[in-house]
Length: 465
Image: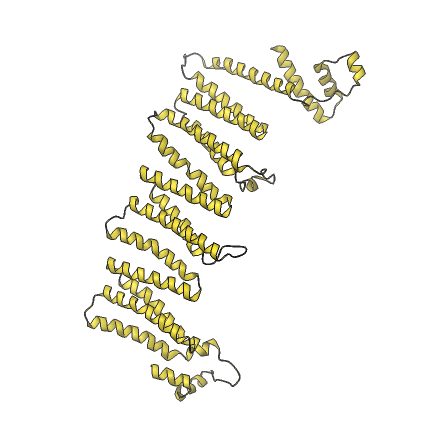
């Protein structure tokens, strides 16, 4: 076959030339051959390359080698084919096609044949991973790096299974360690080979599996408390490093939200009764709110809508804080005293949020939580009276809220509208607030009448009280 290939290349193989002419692939002076013609002219080299691999397989069978060892032999033959292709490209590029295709096909065939023997299968995968990594370096193609980075954790898990340690306590740290290694290598490649407007092509084969391995490690560690504490803390560090390296809010979400898991695991180890464990969320809520407002809230939230606001760096901290505030109420719903304290704490949090963000809308959930605290407080030592009797404390709370609102209104600068009457007339004949709002209600516009009616209702309640 090799002799036939040489004759074809020299132009001495007249029968092959006539076959080519019969197929319509006659070489014409001044026209370069097409890729199809070049491929057809290497048909004898294709046959020779694949026939030699088949001959090696048959020779191993004749020597009574097992199928696993024959797979290892073909895997060892694969890098020799690739090396031969690198040598053959010095003469013609098309000579490399049969050798490369046969070499990389042998890596897959060798792995499949060696699958039954775990030790030999590991050796073959290690050899294949090295071949793919060297191929990426030689051909400058990042595709081969994907194969190497995917094979590395598979090899690690197979080794753990080989030594009888394929357990979450071993597998999860291994996968998380590989995630950190891949992330470090990817960042190093990005620094060495920076590209404008995106990730470096050779960094992506490391970075993409890194995040996949971190997610698998977190899932594998979820069944054991001690292991979950270490792995989830590592996950927080991993995603925090990612957020710092790429300045992306997207990585802050897992970094912030995963922190709740180790915090909860630490709380469950404290000598606290189950009904009080929910109150232990309050320090984390306060810390999240403080970090979001004090450290990450350096620019204003986008006013275009909630979707744009999610991209703000402080938003992961705010969402965690307020989601945990709701969970506190859910955890305490079976204990009246605990629910009372939790509702009071949540109400104070929402009142503080309204003042902190200068958003009066936070006062609505704060007041709702205050009413819930009163209702839960009445259930601490229930007297067994009629149900309508609880309206008395709620009526007092309503008056307290109304008076507080009116006091804030009177104390807020610029809250009351300016009197349109001249200053001289005001000094001569002062007008009471009720008369002023009545005048506005009678002669004002629709919006002014609504505002006047609201103020008149408050003044009426104050007089009645």
